[in-house]
Length: 97
Image (tube, rainbow, N blue to C red; front, side, top):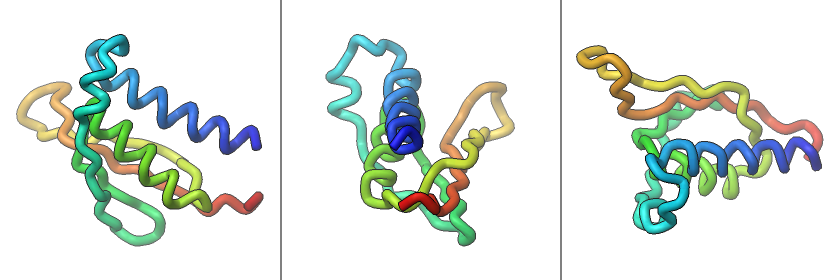
């Protein structure tokens, strides 16, 4: 149960941290949910940033309750320092379910 709560907390953390202002719920409500691209072996690419990434990750975890996050890595353009265009997320099967 603690792992489920930790995963949900992580999803909400990214939703609020990725927004420039955590106090702006309109930005979160307007955020688009994108479908991740599967690279196999439980590795997915989310072509979303800011509130859209948090909302997309939360929706994905809600549909795939048997998965838990192992790591998250940003995908940068390489042209501009700190310009993230998406995130790679690695999951593993949750053996407690």
